[in-house]
Length: 175
Image (cartoon, rainbow, N blue to C red; front, side, top):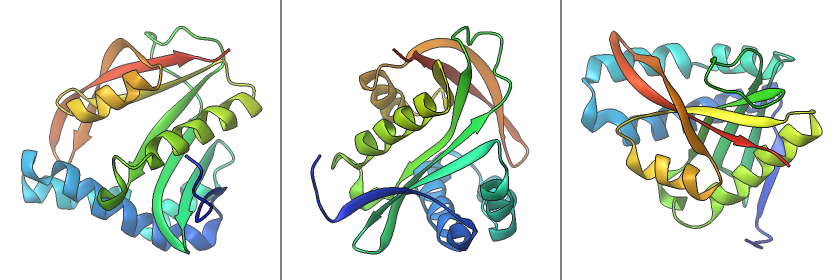
């Protein structure tokens, strides 16, 4: 995708409020129909408050990549170094903890551009594979990850509010 109005950059703490708002809006629009309002609200309050996002941005083991179009935040990815589930067998694993694209830009190539930035970042950080967890019922996201070269390797739990859900774990070995 070669749109000069779209750029990808690394976030800094001044981006926390915009990331929190985009994350909350995207999470709610994607998952609200399949979860109770209470569980959605609890997850958003915990995961997408400005202080939590600012702390995550400042964590040296994490990075946020932002997609900006004409000054508006339209997507982001959160990458994290650290332990991976035993099912992830690639060398030097890096987790793609979140990748969100505003609903109005889904299907436009923004997600693929952001994923390429994630892969490039992981390589630059010495990563040998990228792994992620995705809700087993999110078939659109799973199909996107498969198109991006990820394969199913296992499963793990993910909690939304007080509801423990099953995520599939996918990984991609980097060349």
